[in-house]
Length: 367
Ligand code: OSB
Ligand code: MG
Image (cartoon, rainbow, N blue to C red; front, side):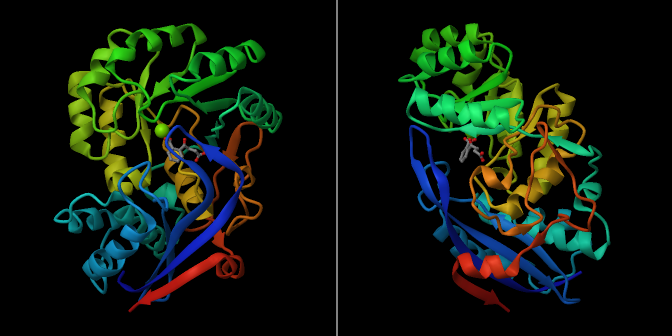
């Protein structure tokens, strides 16, 4: 298979309700839909999940656009691709820029699976018929947090993650636990704590959380290990694990018990699969993270989460969690806390081109 041209569509859509973390409030989501078109006319889709501003990682929509156009697409264009796992090797001389790399790499995996006339989940070795869903609540008031949670629980979600910081953690978690004594709850701090907060973090043990995600700095591995030795709640890393080497270091230091795997953060499938295998070998649990994404990335997440080891519900929610109308057909639906995988070729969902056009603010075709 050869990729002859790539269509880049920058799209933008408002969220139904703003998503708040201690770092940023996301009201409007911008992303790039990457369509890799093979010389046989087969289209594969990927999504660059960077935000408009660099609050989660250093990438932005504009840096991704630059990387794709000037650096990454020229590397893969019109080269024979015998298997999509080669793409991340071709990208090795290019430093970081994981979300830009992932968006093109995942489009190529989709196109390749379609060429092979098989589902992408099968190509990567998945087998779960249904993946385990979960929803995330990012608000600044307890009232709003409880209201959103109640709606999600009613919709069948069995696992809720809330965004916390030292300013609201006890208040939020106490309220949530009082109302839902048996719900699976996770808390994501997006680096809101530091080593001196160990006492504060120990106080969270009593809420019986599934895990606490990324309490300390985005570039820390050492201090998470020190914290994990002093708190009972399992530590899950997100931002700290960008490369396979990061994961090896973290395993070596026992800095994590759980890994949140995001295709975008780690540069695509090849790295995600390598990390998955390492985690299995070292008894680290894994789940699929979310990026407030559109349908293309949602579909890829579902493929990834069909791998047997994805035994913890991920940040995998219905299209309707954030969007009035998604860009894929059918939309993603969570039923009874699960999402059925699709058995069509590639990602198994179709991009609704008319809908995509309507939300596109910039389009370029790289030939
Ligand atoms: O830290 O996991 C995170 C969303 C955007 C950026 C970072 C994170 C998140 C989430 C997932 O928490 C939200 C979702 O996609 O439902
Ligand atoms: Mg996180």
